[in-house]
Length: 174
Image 1 (cartoon, one colour):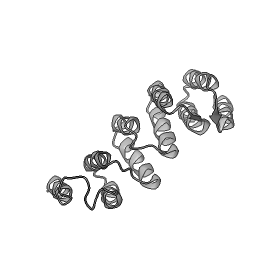
Image 2 (cartoon, rainbow, N blue to C red):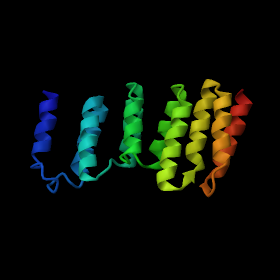
Image 3 (tube, rainbow, N blue to C red):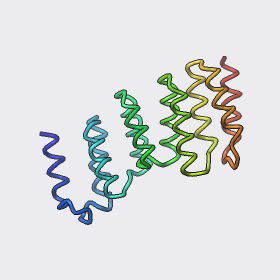
């Protein structure tokens, strides 16, 4: 029944992409409802449709989605949506890489950041700080050091002090 309802919702737009839902507002409302209900797989369907129309969820909803995906062990979906540019804001990216680190996948998170950095050419220390803190939470000191080393090799980094203070914190709890 749920899948049929969502399919009907998408068909209401006429499938042309220029209809009433193309602005993303109603998609955002639907996504919020599905997220609060915990219907992760339907959230993925709605995100795919939003991608098709070139719109994204707002930052608050993005944070909720990232948390829901990781709660349901769907980290690969988060990575996909980050790589596709659907979950693009800094906060959701920071939360995503921290959650990946806390799942014991800090190197995967670092690779994700490297791929994104290649496409956007700027880096933010707050995102690296979040990843370093995720490593520290699990006691992954060597991984945190590797990530910090990669971070230090970057140029033109905003909020660099956050990564440095995160590394100090990791050493203090080691």
